[in-house]
Image 1: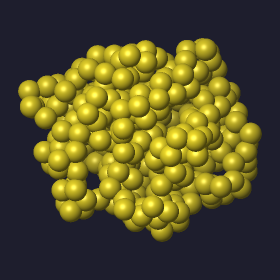
Image 2 (image 1 turned 180 degrees about the vertical axis):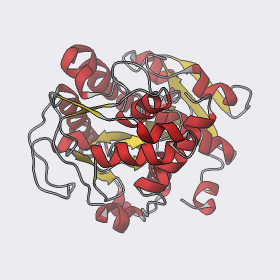
Image 3 (image 1 turned 135 degrees about the horizontal axis):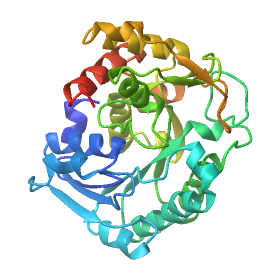
Image 4 (image 1 turned 180 degrees about the horizontal axis):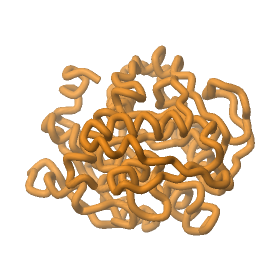
Length: 333
C-alpha cells in the first residue's frame, strides 16, 4: 500500500459495510486519513459506536444505520458509490454452531443483498471478506487458494457460499469482485469481551487482569495470525489494482507464518510484562478442544504477492507488540 495507490482513490466514494467493526473501522480510518470519501453501513450488532466516534465530525464520512439483511438498506448505501469493501458478517465458528440460522441470514442472504445492490448501482469493484475457514478439513499446509476441503462449521459454509455467489455474479453479470480469505486477524479495536471474543484480545485482557488464560487443547494448535495493518494493505491493493488477471478470484491474507497457541500466550506474557512485571508469573490453563476448530492453519501468500503485490509489513511478533501497546494505552482494556 503506497501513497500513490491511495491517491488514485482520492475522487472515489467507498462503501464499507460493517464499518463500525474491528476491521471495518480500521479501513475507515485509513481512507479518511487520506481524504477519501467513506460511507459506513452498520447495524451495530457487533460494531461499536466508539470505533467510529472520531470520524463522525468528518465531512467525508457518512454513517448509515442499517442492516445488510434489508435489501433497501443495501441499495441506499450503494447510491453513487464507486467501490464496496464488504466486511459486514457474523463471525465466530462457535456462534454459528449455536445459531446457524442467524449466521446464514447475515452471511449469505446479507451478502447476496449487497451483491445485488452494488451491481444495480453500477459499483466498479466489490472486495469482500472471505475466510480461512473455507479450507475446512483439507490437511495440506500451507493453504493454497485453489485447494479446499469440506467445511467444518456453519460459518465456514456461509463464507464458501460467498465465494460461489461472487463467482456467479462475475460470470453472469460481468460484475468484478475480489475475495480476501482472512487468517486470524488481530490488532487495535478488536473486542476482548463477549462469548465469541477472538483469542488474542481475550488473552491480553486476562493477563492485564492477572487472570490465567484458558487455551483450548494442549496449546499445540497453530494459526497464521495476521496483524490488521496487513489486512488494510491488502484491501487497498485489491481496490486499486489495474491488473485484470487479479480480479474475480480469492486470495489468502496472512503472514505465511505459523504460531502455536502456547507460543502466542508466551509472547503476550513477554510483551505485556514490559508494562507490568507481575504478568510474567501468570500461569496458563488448558481445556478441551473447541468444536469445529481445525488443528493447524498456515497460508501460502504467493498468489497475493504475484497478482496483488502484497508484502506484509508486520509479522506475528511486530504485530503483537503494536497490538499490546494499543490495548495497554487504551485504559488497559
